Length: 237
Image (cartoon, rainbow, N blue to C red; front, top):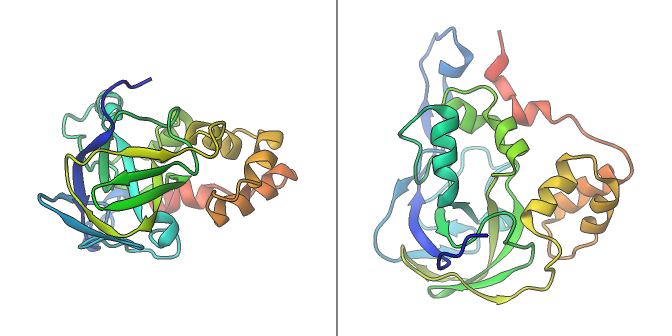
């Protein structure tokens, strides 16, 4: 378990932009729109119910909203991905995260945890479900699946109380209503065919509604097709 102090090591925002090359043959090089490229921000930033000032998302069907206001990612994961991808430039903001954090990871952060950070109060709402866009950014077709299989997904916060936050702010946990439901447990329940765990977690009132519904289906033995999310257009001919 990470014993470092829990805090925001860096804060990142970005807006959607056009990427890729028109006419490219390789699917990973083709045009696409994304806000995955986030830039570090210094000073205090307003955190509203829907996210940080200056931040945005390209596909609002699956990104953004009150249940996904802030994406947090542990700084301790970046060295692993530098080795896996053989890319020395994998660092803070590499996966579109808003907060790079210390002092916690998926096995020590729980659904429903409430934290005081700066002038705001936030609550863990769900793990991130990796999609094809990090794979395209880093030119690695299997990256979404690797993120999912390793459990190094990061997690989202909903905002309970708006306020200003900044790099260096402590993440002070003030409530832990569901200590058994770590982010790691939630990832396994969703992705490893664990029907009993899926059924139990689906009853958690502090888990994001979309996750609860998906887990109910999985608990009943019904799985949707994950390929559009994991692969998207990255394998098109």
